[in-house]
Length: 502
Image (tube, rainbow, N blue to C red; front, side, top):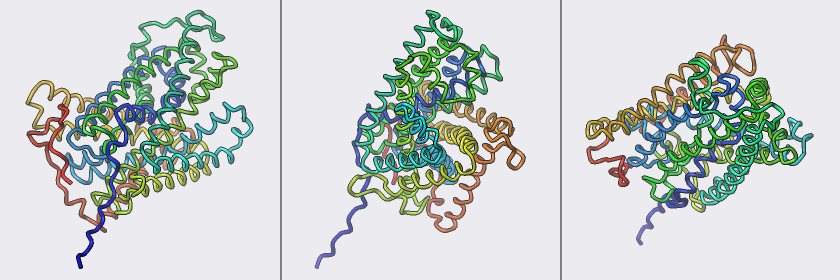
């Protein structure tokens, strides 16, 4: 009797989404309306009318790193992105740390995004009493995380259709608010007096170097998330080109959105009111919408709600796909590499991300709401780390091609390297600022320094410990050796290069 061949392991569904779907997911993952609501007040408090210029300056390192993502994806279209590429360039240990940083950013922020989505939805519906009930908000936020995780498991196509609707609603609401706000600001028809926009607002250096540094730290957080488009590379049509291109275009669209809305907000509200309400963070948009739109204030509330809900889902994508990629190469237990045979999505890693994120959200919330905010502040350390690692990996991995042409030198070497250096600089500054307990929401020292720094460093040390434990149990992944791109690998062409070795 002939022995039946073993059934092949299910893989992610190739061609599940196209370029536009990928672009939308990259935009949604940044949560534009929520990000603007969270940073516009603090940025204005730092740099005044030059807030649009700071958003412009923050775009530069993001564009350079997005270019690195696009180039590396052409050569190695792996859903693990930074994990896979840094492993190839610098070896397994650096790659594992990069993968851990990506995964933990999702864990830290998903619950908070869900909470913002829940609160603004309740406010939009006029259910203020429920929005003020902490137990109700926590329960609804946990439910939202679970629902969004289920949609991620049910299929990438379903996820993209949901995101298409949410991004359209969010963009339309932001556009309405921006147009009304800037027109009323120019006319002087604003309760705050209003300011006439000026080209000088686009100068990020107008408020001085120290203020610019603080603004850039906030700006980088606002742009973070566009790489979700590249994490779906194995599920995207034209996987070598479309995801990277979607990531780059996501940053460009975000630039236009952020600068445009920042100009509108500063024009309508001026700087004194925004600076005075900087501590309100996302509530700034709720307050402004009432003043700018009157009875139509629900429009902006809907923008922030849909933004946060959309990002709740898309933020799960990088973490789950990175876990899948790490498991396929034995950097994590094999069960994290499970792909649903029916839906062709990473089911186990998705539910693990959701479970740990919910546990973190509820656990830290029980400590205090300020501790939860401090854990989000710690994101800046992880974001700057894995973005910088990706830029360095690009320049190092393609080092043989840098002398081929000026184009190769700029796009594969200088650009990614400059982006990495800028982010490393911001990382150092972030460590310095977060070391001061006065810069935390808790306002108290943990181990002699600010709580966000303790949380960020603690997460990375936990990752190192977990890595060492797993390496002791299964060292196969650590047998991989760093390499260099083959001479025939052209990451700037549509063809990319030789297929990734399995």
